[in-house]
Image 1 (spheres, one colour):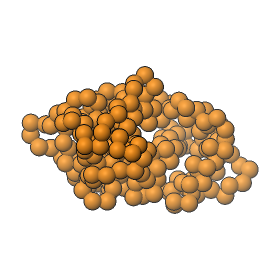
Image 2 (tube, rainbow, N blue to C red):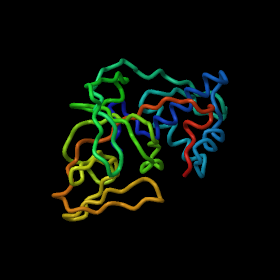
Image 3 (cartoon, rainbow, N blue to C red):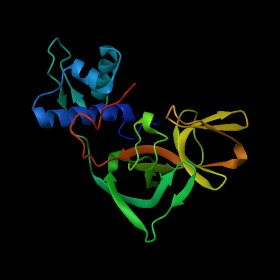
Image 4 (cartoon, rainbow, N blue to C red):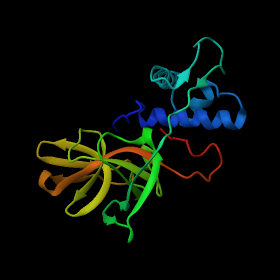
Length: 215
C-alpha cells in the first residue's frame, strides 16, 4: 500500500494510533515489549524500526536512550475534508451506491493526491491487511497500480478490494486472507478504479483489540 501524503505507511499509522490511545488511557507511553506484544512482532527490532520512521517523519520525539517510557508524540494534522461516499464494496459484488449521494468528512492527512472518494467494506477478504468488515476506505482515483498495492478494481463489471500483481498480460488480485483464493484475470477484464490510501473505523471493542495484529 502506498504511503499517504503525511509520509506514514498504514503499519506506521497503526503504531502511532496505538501509542496515542495507550497514552490517553495510561498517561504514559508503552514499553517496546508492550508494543511488540500488541502487534505480534517477532522482535523488538521491528518496533524500533517503526518508531524511528515515526521520528524521521516528525510524529515522534525521543532521546533514544535506555529509558523505556520516554516517547513523546507530535500531534497529527487533522484538518477535515469532505469527499464523496460512493457506497459499499465487497469481493465479488457490484458497488452498492447509496440512493442519495452522500459525502463524508475525513482527516486531510488521509488523502492521496488528486481525486478521492470513500467506500465501505463488506466482507473479510483483506483482514490480514487490517481491513475489516465495516471499515471505510479512502480511495485515490487512478487507473493504474504497482505490484503489491491495494486497489479497488472492477472485474468484468464487479467491484473488489484486493492486492494487485501483474504477471505479463495476466492480472492477479490477491486477497489478504489465507482462507480465500486469488483471482487471475486477463488485463482486459480488470479495470482499476483507485488505490486504497486510508482507513476509518469506529471502535467499540476494549482498548487492546482495535490495533491488535496477528503476524
